[in-house]
Amino acid sequence: MAYFALVPAAGSGARMGGGMPKQYLPLAGRPLIFHALAALAAMVAIDKVFVVLAPDDTEWQRHDWSELGARLEVLRCGGDTRAASVTQGLRAMRRDVAPEDWVLVHDAARACLTVDHVAKLISEAGVDPVGGILAMPLADTLKQASESGDGVARIATTVPRDRLWQAQTPQMFRHGMLLDALEFAPAVTDEASAIEALGLKPRLVAADVTNFKVTYPIDLQLAEVIFASRAATAAANLQEVS
Ligand code: C5P
Image (tube, rainbow, N blue to C red; front, side, top):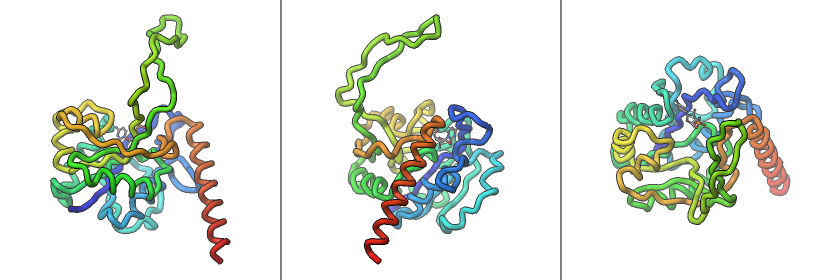
């Protein structure tokens, strides 16, 4: 049984604003997507990292990806939604991947993913018959807004937060099961929802807040701070060793 990664990167990143798709915005001196690909490519357990691009993507070839090694493969088969991009990617992967192999689907926009996050998911979800996802128990109180005619957001109700988790990625399932699930439930916003639609219960693997999705401009600043802090820690450790 083998592990593969699939990174859908065919979105436009409309909530980020600006003309450039968010996966290519500069972060710590690299295009944003480079960081998640680097964390996945650094895992020896992962045989190959597939990236799904929009068929008309012209930005990818402007950058140098050679540092990520030969296990990176580009699939130009992105669709109109994230689920469509993942489904098309899974179909294209069938050349290399067996139905029982594990696929870790990861958002290009979760740039601060670390090898430790991935290793934890593989060790905990990899022993589960269904698979699982990285997630975080919800700390905040949740409010649902009413539909307001005056353009002002108002609280309609408070949603009890007991047992609520925020779903992150990677989400790890067997290739055959995930493709079947997405073909059965194509209108989902993550892979786990499709698996749930089959009546199965994916495992929740506790991650942390650093694995957030870069969505708004402020998130990019936050990610810069995280990378700067990691670089400072790495430099301090190196000095200690030498
Ligand atoms: O837009 P959002 O941040 O939810 O997108 C999550 C991930 O799905 C991103 O990596 C984005 O590029 C990808 N995506 C895709 N195809 C789409 C829409 C989003 O691959 N049509």
